[in-house]
Length: 447
Image (cartoon, rainbow, N blue to C red; front, side, top):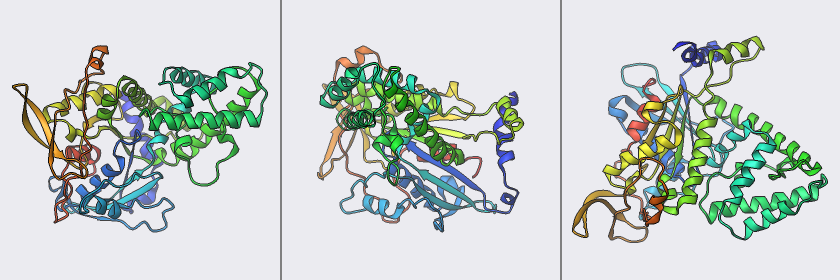
């Protein structure tokens, strides 16, 4: 057990402000993930579950949305998001594209003092910047260019790769060349996301910039040579990583106690082997970057250097969304697959207590048995967007492990665009799959 198990506790104790004993306890939960995984609806549903009277089997006596006060981080628009889902007809709310916070004050059963739960929502694109903190510019360029050589060939890919190949080994450190390569690379990233459904696209802020004018050091791109131009790009890469450490790892991740990473694994399986391999790489890189749990050596070493130990994230939940698109018997496979992609299967839980889940933030289907070719199969049915009729869907079998080549030889996973389920009139939560288990994992020690 030893010292490694004690290091996170030591870190939390060293970072405590003595005034915290008189303040309301605060638990900060980060919510992020791969692009288009349903993070906005998930956050709306998590709040809705906690706001329902007697939530989590009576552990929550009452919950209210806290005022934002002078908080510099914008408030997550919970009321607007829920109103979209409760409309007539209901519709999916627009995705968020900036950092936002949703704070709830929870009155716990048993007379204990209230606790404040803060959900921090930030763009999933930024999550994939974390692995860059461990790479040099040369390594990042080599890995990125190797991936791009394997991506689907289209105009933007050809334009960028042709530009890089045409650069001489002694290319000068020119702002004009850097700007041109940056523009072509940024266009390529957008195409890979929009046209090919890829997720592992770095840097994330090229796709989802932060507020304000972009600094000059944002204009870089991967280049694997030893030219003066590569030296200029390396300086800009290093400035980007330094800024990312300050604004993302320290300011955001450094203040998070728990983390949710959500991904749409079913859509990746449906899109094809390239999209699935990309999602697998993205999740693996993110999971590896999040394993920054302290050892006793790093804690003591930081103290000897006169610094506080690096922060820890106590629990990480890797969440596969859209579990309502497959029948109940397939959801276990979906959860197991997510666990295998992130090394968070039950027999391999890390010190951070990582765990995988398969959830539906707002359940849009019901299970039923469908007879296909004379054989009963477990299927689902729901209403398509803009259509009042129930549509049946048998998406196929979900593999519990990353599939081999034989899996891709037949069509798999038709994923209809289902309409949001009608919300109950009494506003008691939202019909979902797995959110109670997810919240219990994240907050059981608090509630």
